[in-house]
Image 1 (cartoon, rainbow, N blue to C red):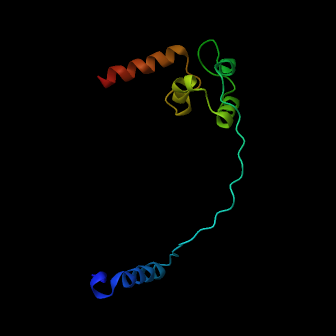
Image 2: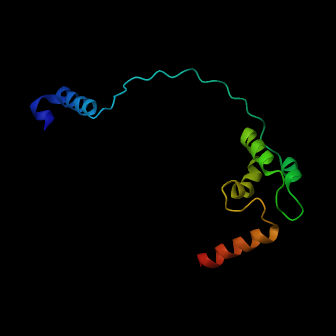
Image 3: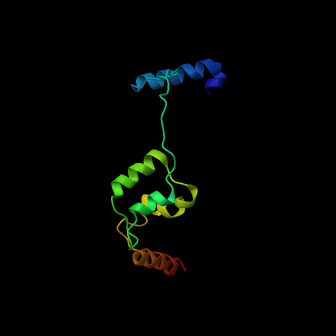
Amino acid sequence: MFFCNGGLSSFIEAIRRLISDAGFELITQLELPERSEVKRDKPLKEAIVLNYKQRDGSYKEVNKLKSLIFRGGLEMALRRDLWNFLLGVFGWEYTHEDIVNVRFCVVVFAV
């Protein structure tokens, strides 16, 4: 409709008026500050993660472990298991037995 009556410039001006009348501001150019350099630690190795794992399979000092993971990430080999804890699939207090039971329930109910 706008293209027939006044072309593209008329259409754009009508959109600007609609936005202005609604109380919004159309931002066409945005200047961002310079990005600060972020220093990351090296990804956690299995030996470090094992220091936080207890004999029953649960984890101790979870907040400290999460902080280390946040600052450096995880080695690729650890991600499959630890992402289940980070995403809340397993609780950090779960034992080996709890994890087996949860996995069994998922398999049984998925079938």
